[in-house]
Length: 157
Image (cartoon, rainbow, N blue to C red; front, side, top):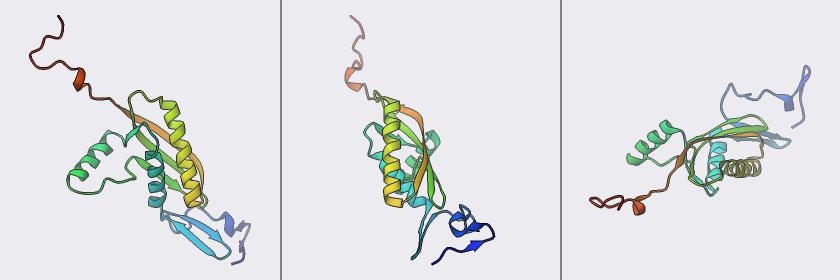
């Protein structure tokens, strides 16, 4: 396929969504086009974020509650819960909502998640990642059942 010029815009400068606003990325080469759906990029980003130690769960409160209901009904817990992406022809951006484990340094965790997501999306999808925004929506606290006094025991002596 040769590069086609239409007025002053080349085929490589085509709008981000050339297919009438449909989701997905299109990687054009001389020998054809590869289209990557937004859902694929979101799954790659979600899996990469889950690989980082200290990430407990994904999604804001409402998203987590909806996911719990889906899980109780036997639906699979989506890898994309708490992950949204915007995908263009050559670039992608992601927003990730996290619940972190108590005690984890949040700036370090956010940097690790961001780096892993960027590496995974760029390697697997061939897209340049322009940004990965991390929103920490909650902290998962450890259960303190072992240090809690048993019923009927005085708390102080």
